[in-house]
Length: 500
Image (tube, rainbow, N blue to C red):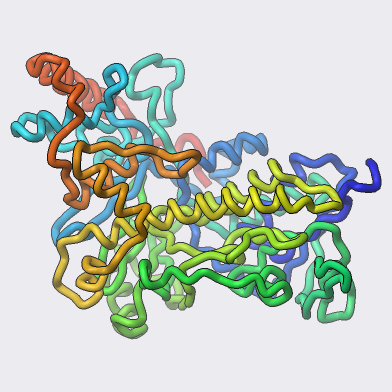
């Protein structure tokens, strides 16, 4: 290695973010790099991010992780989407499913044909044209059968629900087997170089100094290096996403084992439900400006499916992001980089995408500013577009039963989101910009699920005779239904494939 190469990488903090970073870097880099992870047994991990999105499969396959083994070790279940209850209005339920809707025709999207038939009352509910949503409603699951050509069974997209602390432990074993060194203890602070302000070492409470070239800050909300040491600054988004607290509690499992996450809107926030093999993870995300901790805890405990297995744990947060994800020689990953509530299960994905971006822009000793600026520009874009998608869930509501929902319905929103809503309202169009995380179908499902209905549809739809469209839609619906009929139940599949 030449002198300009980075040799020593120090990861500050364990948990999901720290061990995901350690595992990925130990896989990508040769043993010529030294990777050290510093964490303290005394500092608990937040450990609520238990639901994921399908992009986690890219991370797992890059690390050559065996899916069934990883699922057994983390007591995981499968996830086909997220059910949203009471969001658009009380009594509503829709599922944001992963994977495609029915097939597009030429360059015209499937949902455009559906919009035309909806106008004349000849379309079934949108859910009937998604293999993921139909399977979720029936509590069925199978992994995509890529050998089945153009069958909907080839198109099933899945993510996971898993125990975050078991996942961190699993990745720790993976990382240590690849040479990552773990140092136990609490960090008292960090020192910086006088000439350029780069961090040169973290200092342990024992007085031990751990020096490094590149530091990855996975210290959670504290942002030990990115904020406490480098004073990077934080962009607060709580005027758009007013929830600032969460209570988390596990409860006993109940039948059936559902292959989806549930998010139920409450009067000042929402409640999550994440089924694992051995328990159900639950939480209540709420706005302290509109309710009290006691009322929020009572609501959570009253609405559990099984007996609680612990007392609710309180987390406080401010939605937003650091002004820079990468500052000097420190890259913030996970909660140290910013926080968005887990409404669409994006927390673990943001860890993954930051690590992947770091690999793309991996520095040498010169820490070229052009690389760092581009890294930050891409990270900002990704965070902001996810933020817009989350805001949509709150803004697009007809609920007027509480002060919280009145605030959300009437609040001003970012111009980028306003433009997306207006575009969809005209002719049902959605465009995925650059490498935006959520697909066009995700936006369509949430728009329609929350009563944003376009005035018209894509004019090219009229190039196909209406009777042909009706036959096509009916055929798609029948095929989807038949596919779901042959699938095993989610519980049966888990039992056979990855029972813990």
